[in-house]
Amino acid sequence: MSDTSSEPVNTSYAKAPTLAVTAGGVTFAYRELGPRGGVPVVFFVHLAATLDNWDPRIVDPIARERHVIAFDNRGVGASTGEVPDTVEAMAADAVTFVRALGFREIDVFSFSLGGMVAQVLAREYPELVRRLVLTGTGPEGGEGIDRVARTTYYDMARAALTRSDPKEYLFFNRDTTGRSAGRAFVERLGERTTDRDRPISVRALRTQLKAIKRWGRSEPTDLSEITQPTLIANGDNDRMVPSVLSEDLHRRIPGSELVVYPDSGHGGIFQYHREFAPVAVEFLTR
Image 1 (cartoon, one colour):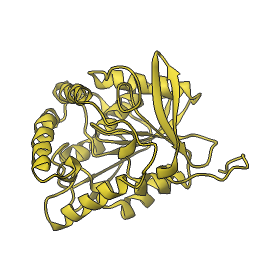
Image 2 (cartoon, helix red, strand yellow):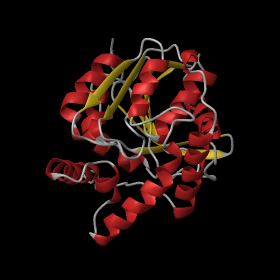
Image 3 (cartoon, helix red, strand yellow):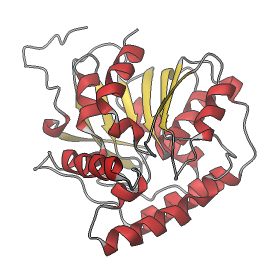
Image 4 (cartoon, helix red, strand yellow):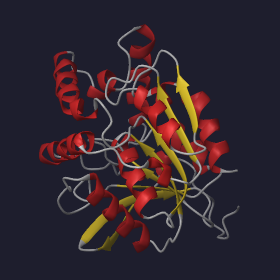
């Protein structure tokens, strides 16, 4: 696949300009990079995250091969509107965004809350999703998901006491390796120095947590309805969305592939970005 324009192809997420498209009464902020043409890979971000929270060591390798799009859902970051209080409504907004850009088919790369949205998308809009990457996430009705808010507030308080980024606690083990990986991850998120996104509001965070709690307390859905090729990945010690739920997804989604990284937590794919990025690229370029 190649870009047909004469302009050089940008494959650096830190340098991708922030764009906007308006649809359904919402102006969605997004960034895109990589070679244009074909089916794009759309990134679905995690709880409390904005465009600035994607690890460039994951995005950039994929963008060297594929057209990549990351976006802020309704009410998040620079996107307008109010955050929905259900995962299903978030998925409907994502469909609105994708269709506003003129795409009829996408590949999905998702993390955490984004993976919950992606599951709804794959089941309810199967014609839209071609391939699916689910990382650090779990199924509807998954045991322990309704406790995400408790874990989030606890780790936010711990991070405040040490003047650290909460993601260092939420995403990584608190051993020597995990602490080092967490600091490196946060440093990478700071590589973009201009045109940064607007932080998520406290109200938006609370609404997202409400949606996650509802997702965790809902009745399990039939994941055999997800027939798209699916790659699942996590660390083996995920405190936010228990790692056993990644195994549950793998058992219930036909033909899915599972990668679990040792001695790592919710952010296992970021701690092991050197190992995971090539796996994701291979899966998305088959």
